[in-house]
Length: 247
Image 1 (cartoon, one colour):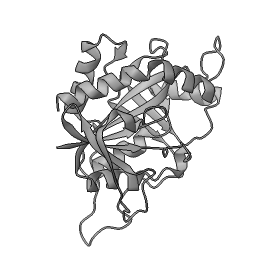
Image 2: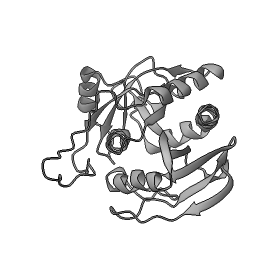
Image 3: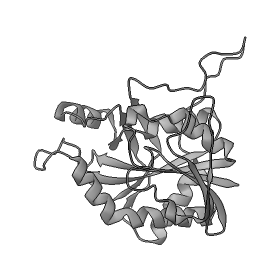
Image 4: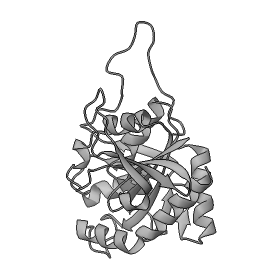
């Protein structure tokens, strides 16, 4: 089984692949945001796609999520592991901590959230979404975090906002009251679409900041996110490689 990897901000390095080659794919939904890079990790076939493009030129709303997921399926991927930067909405989820997501809240407004623009006669497609993150993949990510003794949280609800702006303080506090643990701009959309195509999907999130709800801290900036990612990217890479080795 080929394993799809969607790399988020700071974690889409094609150099982690051995014997890399490009897979060009134009889907019924347009071109994906990057060429799908095929190769090997630990003897396993993988396909790497950069969510925002290789040069990070696509804002969250303009990411072609449908094309990205469809392209990975066309490349032969039987499951998808994703990485993402998140802001923490909980005191206990510190900077650099990893969160193995198990639920999402979708707070986006402008995205196409389904592959189905219409239904076949008498064949409506309403995808179950009670548990959007695959249990087996999550278990492998958790086991990898434990093996390397990394600071991590074995479940968490991510709230996905539209972006590209960050939250107001009122919004950040509202999301906390809703039960969200972390916040980002991509994962809910990806998870929903992967589930529609029956592709098992899981995501490892790295907390880079406290959004803006903590009044004793400066509100998040993009520079903060990049700095924390650079300091901790090897953690996520090691978790992915270990999980892939056990698939």
